[in-house]
Amino acid sequence: MIGFVIKLYAVDRVGRIQLQIIGFIGMAIGMLVVALSGDQSTTSFVIAGFIIFNLTVNLGPNATTYLLLPRCTPPGCAALGMASRRHAEKAEPRSGLSSSPLPQVTSGPAEP
Image (tube, rainbow, N blue to C red):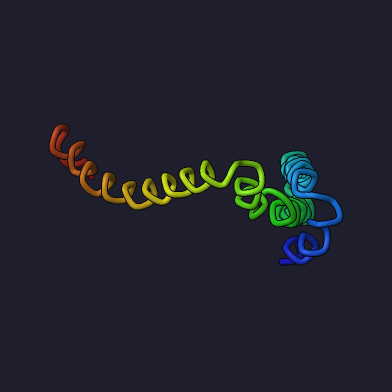
């Protein structure tokens, strides 16, 4: 939540691409903090790492990714890309539902 509020104020001042870069670097730093706390298993480092990660993912890559497509492409191409994405979103669950029984039919039910 805090990352979104910071993004509202920073998006016009810093820019969308810069927020993406800052967000990805912050995500890497957050995961590095979590990884370095490994053997010590100190909860404070793990929590701090996830706070840094969540703050920066909301600051940069989360919603900014979807804002870049309409800005960077011509309107016709952007509309075609968004329509194709929407079609794929609707087709994916249907294909998963129709193809999921196939492994069970070919290899039999899973053993408990």
